[in-house]
Amino acid sequence: MSEFDEFDQQGSVPSKEAGSIISHAFEMYKGIFLYALVSMIIYIIGDFILQSITGFNSWSGFSDFRDLDGDYANYEYWRKPGFSLYYSFSSILGILLSPIYVGLIYIANKFNTKNTIEFSDLFIGYRQNVGNILLYSLITTIIFGIAAAMCGIPFFFVFPLFLLGYPILLFENATAMDAVSKTFNIAKENYGLFLGVALLGLLISISGLVLCCIGIIITAPFIMIVMYSTYCAYLGKPRQIMFKK
Image 1 (cartoon, helix red, strand yellow):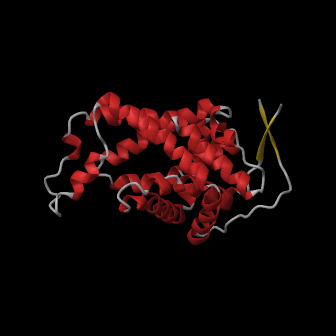
Image 2: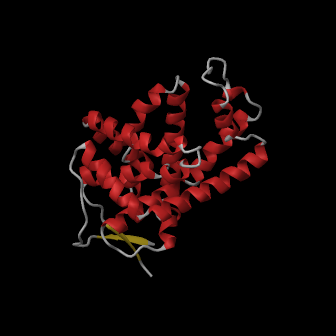
């Protein structure tokens, strides 16, 4: 069982500017990088098992793409055998692992407020509000999937509207629908800045693809810390979650 407590602790809060939020996220990310790496290793292990079951090698698409010598017109990655089955189960995997993404946000807050970080903190999402975290992840996965299916571009305009959802679920112990409503309303009122922050965060998160794709392991979790820094900028430094012994 958990409760919320507020401490008069030091902790940086970025201003409501894209540059300040991204810089704040960088500082947080550098401090918790090893935990971010562990979260990606867990995801890769799950993805490897999923690929073994479905028989679809998602990473082969990148090597195929590289071998096209600039002729991408007829490249149809989605027509490869096992594509639909793999990505259907991949979405489920992402939903089941969403509490770990929330754990990264929690660790970022502990680092920011100079609290001692424990490895078990990475899994706090499975102890704190897990039902709503999973439900919220399911809702956003469906929304993002529909947006991505519309030539992909709408995804980048929809994503900023849900930038604060996970921090709200964790630090405010909100329901999934309350988190959807609150993040949407805040982002809607500040859409230009949220769009800029989200695009920068996503660009940095996928930048690892240029390093033979392996670099994505290092950069992908960065977007979760961007969510935390954006929360700090607009809703203040979060309350620390304390668990009763």
